[in-house]
Amino acid sequence: MTSYMINNLVLSLAIFSIGIIGFLVKRNAIAILMAIELMLNAANLAFVTFAYSFASVDGTILVLFVITVATAEAAVGLAIFIRIYRSRGTIDVDKMTTLHG
Amino acid sequence: MPVSILYYALFVIALGAALMVVLSRNTVYSAAFLILTMLCLAGIFLLMHQEFVAAIQVIVYAGAIMVLFLFVIMLLNLREREILLPDFRSLRIWVVLLVLVFFVQVGATCFIVLRQMRDVYPPELPPDTIPLIAKTLLTKYLLPFELVSVLLVIAIIGAAMIARHDEPAEHSDSS
Image (cartoon, rainbow over all chains, first blue to last red; front, side):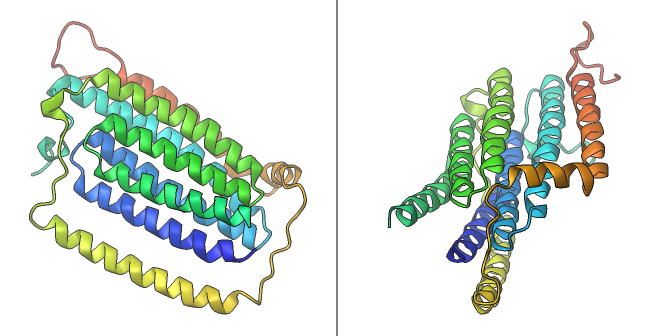
C-alpha cells in the first residue's frame, strides 16, 4: 500500500513544522524540549515510512538510534533545566541571557 | 475499508494532538497531548506492520521519556504566573511564516516526486521483520549500537551529576 507513503510524509512534514513553530514560539524551556521531541517523532515517522515502502530494515534501525539519542537528550536537558530553575527560579528562555554578550 | 478509516482517524488525531502540544498553555496538557501524538504514530507504525518500532515507541517514548517530562514538570511546580504564554511578537512571526513556506515547498516537491515513483517501487513486505532487525543491528550496525550504549551511560551519569543537589550554599554554581 504505497498510498501510506505520501500521506505519511505529509503528516511527518506537518508535525515537523508544528514542532519548529513550537520551538520558535514557546518560552517555557520544557515546552521547547517537547517541541524537539515532536520533531524527532516526525523524523521517525518518515524513517519508518521509507523502511516500509522500500522493504528495507535500515530505516527501522535508525529509528531505534533516534529514540535512544532522544532519551539521552531529554535526560540531560531536563537535568539542566532543573539546575537552572534551582539557581534562577525560572525556566523562561527569554530570561536566560547570561551568555548574551 | 476499515483499515483506511482507522488510518485516517489516527492521521487526524495525531495532527490535532500535535497542534495542541504547541497551542495549549499548560505544560502538563502539552505533555499529555504529546503522549497522544506518540500513541497515534505508534498506531500508524502498526498499520505498516512495523510492530517492533511501535512497541518501542509506546514503551520508551510514551512511557519512559514522557514520564521523565511529567516528573520534571511536577517537580518544578510552575505556578500560574510561570505558565508562560507563547511569544508571537516581533520578528518571530516572520520566522514562522518563512519556515511554513519552506516546508510547504518541500512537501509539494515530495508529493510530485513520490507520485511519479509510485509505480516504480511496489513494496514487498518481509513477513516477520524482527529477526531481520536483530540480525542487521548486531552485524551491519554493531559499531553504532555500541556507541549509542556508551552515549546512554554518559548521558545518564551526566544528568545525575548536573541535577545533583548541592549542599547548603544555595547559589553556588561550582560543581
